[in-house]
Length: 555
Image (tube, rainbow, N blue to C red):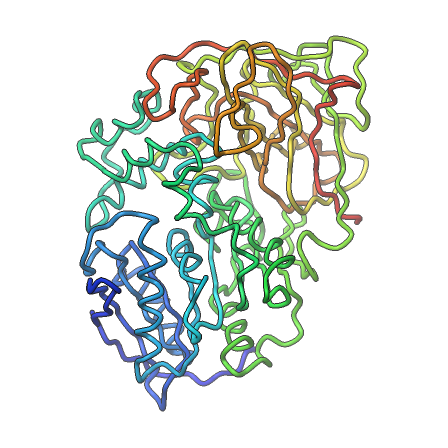
């Protein structure tokens, strides 16, 4: 049990923090009632610092434990002045706010940057070149670079970003449940989705004009700067977090490159983007340990790195990870865990891997004594679906993938039932040899845990546009019919695949509405209207050994 004094809490509302151009940034401050000054937790949010459900209870809990909390509306949202334009003002406004906080009489010279989702992105954008008072960062399900996830993932539109754009349009949150989102999944051109919904968004239209990592987006990217990180970080996400690329890239890169590489910590639970919540998907139960005292965990870590009470953290290791399957938490010295080995499972079939009823298999060695490829037609006007609730901002989860796997435009490759448990913890990759009849197309890959009763639980997935297979900065089209190697990042997972279960790899060319359907043309995705049908192939033989790469932990 952690030991720290408990305090009554005093609120100072709507303090005017000046940005570097004089704009007033509304900041609510919650203080412990006692003899200060205090270490400060600083949160910048587009979702209202006066949110009675998420912001105020968090601020009061931290303040009652001896930390001042400064919660600020970002530029142009709620009580802050200026124009709201996502991604591009967070560094300058964050740095100006750090200076202001450090000068206040309630700050003891120690500031921790913290936030969830877009707030976590705000924290990352202000960490490089930070004020000397900034001593720690806690990015929770933070957004990664905008070209890697939202609004663009590897050149494809993350469709629910139009939902988010409407949600945060103008100063206050908008009602997004009044719309029939499913009726819009096939709408083109994408750069007029805002108009179709009854509003006009300059950011949305600017985003749709820039699907490459160009000079527009580069100032909003930060993940290449981990070598500059010089303060402790507690990275937090879930195995089903739809902004996972930030955590699974930033933590290992910081461990290798950061000036504070020995001060990096990691927490990953079995959660979606709504961190530390109980799964509500039918048939899924991660057990009684799924939800933890996450605020207590963070406070103990803060006590160690800047609160002057390292005993509350004690001798805990660096990484606390939930192992699905066994549904237990485990401590590790690092992530990926020491001893992790990459295991390859190779695709094979007699040419009929279409759907879960086909003949596709995953096996230990590359070999094919039958046909050396599988083929399917991808029609952008009848795209392969992706299972999610269109009325939420969460993409993906431990859904039963069988409704999708019944389709002939989905290739399925499955292992025999496992003879013993298999522990997977780390990054997932699908390395495929592919060809298309179209000018350009997309390939999507998904890994599933297949239960003995046939249930196929989604683990994680990813995508790649063929013309952007090597770089996001320029298109490199593949001539129709040419065979090339691609490597699809399927993010990461942590699970014990139980004896008698199987692994299944799905390959398709769309995942709507996770990604807007690729038109199979080289037209810019934001303005593309005309779509064509593509005949797409996945090759698998000794010369073109398509495989899935999984991180295996010796049991």
